[in-house]
Length: 401
Image (cartoon, rainbow, N blue to C red; front, side, top):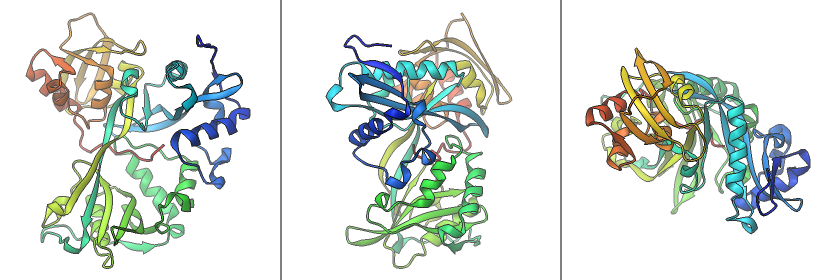
């Protein structure tokens, strides 16, 4: 397709590789280490990118790859993951992003993928394309010196110290078990494992290389650093399949005697604060969205996950970008959903971005109702859909892309 000002949207080729890399470096203000720039180490192949070209120069790009996402009910779904969306600072406000997104989403629809996911750098851009935040995280800081476990807190043991090289197979195996039960987690491709285990110095922020602790049902990867003149253990990744693994690894982390502070990321309902005698020691320093999502095919997306209660509701969904909206009868029995287009009057009216936020269970319908972004015929309907969309586990992003 061609924009009015002559800028052309097309598929990228290998000849565009250097230009797309330069544009991304400029847009995001960082460069990958040279050893991680080869096609073999990439999740997103250049041939799957969409580019905007002006006079032979690449002035916009968006990358895509097929991913395997876990949704509520311990089900996995093939989805489209989008990354590296950027427009040259010389070509902003010319409709390039919308044109690239139009083509990218046309391709995703043609592939029959029910969901698109995206780690978003700016929160004001993508709602107009039908995306909503669907995973949220809390950055926390724990003063290790005063952390004491409650007498009733589990003390299962089983943690071992290890080098990263010694436990790569175990880390992979635990992650695969973990991602199959956690909404929002993705299967991790080989290229992303390679980046994690390479642990490039450019990504360490001046801290050490990775240390590891492992448990039969979990692991934690962390590094040592300095902040405000104190020693800090920075948790890079913790994945636990069982509560015992969670408790055991936290006992080990909070036993690092020469560390003043442990920095990590927790979900809203992580049990760590309630294992300690003083829950205020788990101090939230930031709260942010980790993953955004768009429903490409509402019936396919809503029937891909399971639900916590029976439900009979008609949803009127507005899609400002594509043609995925409409009215849909959603019926749930014993956790299993059926969803079909209907002409019946709506019980709930909402934007497709709101439905996206609700999809993994992290954002309740009642909050959107109070903000007048979801309209329901009565409060009982809001309560019913809240209960149905709730999940037993918090949604967590498996790996950043």
